[in-house]
Image 1 (cartoon, rainbow, N blue to C red):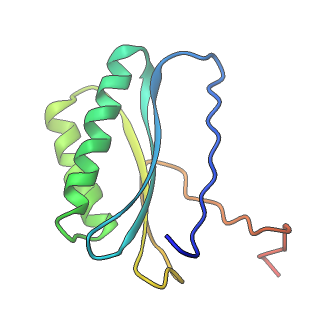
Image 2 (cartoon, rainbow, N blue to C red; image 1 turned 90 degrees about the horizontal axis):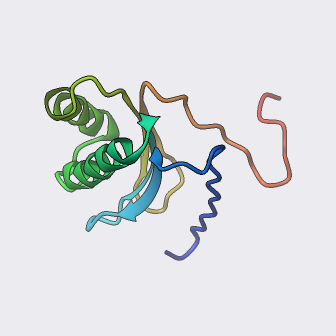
Image 3 (cartoon, one colour; image 1 turned 90 degrees about the vertical axis):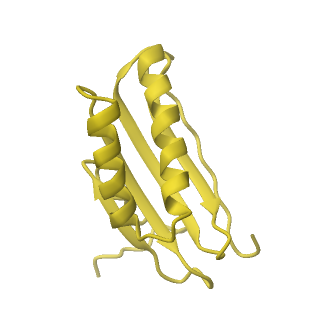
Amino acid sequence: MPGVEFAARYAPADRAVGGDWYDAFVLPTGELWVVTGDVAGHGLRGAVIMGRISSSLRSYALLGLSPAEVLELMDRRARHFEPGWMVTVVCASSKPPYGEFQVSCAGHPPPVLAPVGGEDLAG
């Protein structure tokens, strides 16, 4: 996408398979979504649940819903199909020209804005 760059580095502390993920995708409307999440726990089961959750999130986003509405559907889905597992997600979406993002969190810490050059945002 012209004018949009992403960089990511994921380095798990113990190099074990787990449920952390991040994603960025563009919907047919041109809306950009940036998502990160975590399925609590490690091992193959956590990774499988992460795959199910991340795929479901993309499908719900195609319905044209807000991040908050998508996370509400995701909560219902996780409670029904993945009982006993804790999942946290943060979604940010933006429509062209991508000047503002709508952000919703479900148990996940909110994102931190860190501009290039380290300018103070509090001032």
